[in-house]
Image 1: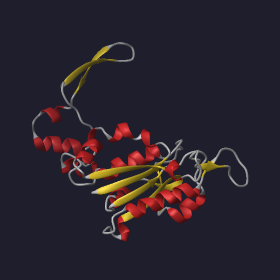
Image 2: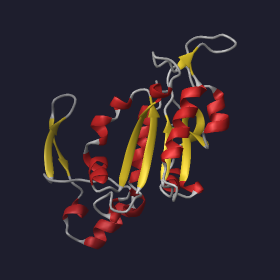
Image 3: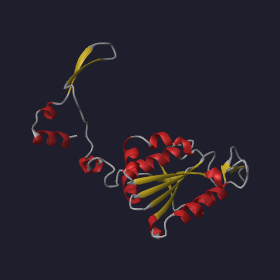
Length: 221
């Protein structure tokens, strides 16, 4: 079983999605576990302050290293002693990180524990990237308000590699390939932008029942 330890100031943002579909079933089967950790619980004051003004000036606030460092340290202390050192990986979501891809998610699935750090505000004290995280990851060439969505993407993308999470091994995109799919009805009557009615048909090869033709059709795309 792989455990995802998610450090965030918005743990409630994950609840609904994690209970549904593939991830919900995977947790019930105890194939994966998601540990939501509130960064504010590691704040040094009663208000749960996790940010402060940036040195050198500039707009916005910066997440402090102290509560994140304490959070990661506590998670590591809770990880079972039998887990090997290489069984844990600390990931920081950052616009300067390496773009997430399938090879990366496959590599992450080999770990027993993934600690995912979700930033907010104008960013995170750079010492988290330098001394706490093992690597920085980005979802792509765009900016989000925080790392929570990125963490959900990583949890789902990595979980798909765990045997038993998907109904069938063949459901993996890299196994079956990527191609257009159709289902009933064979012919659907829709309308164009001008309101003209027209038939949208399923390719004849797919409804032929001829396995070789179906395979060749998919290879052409």
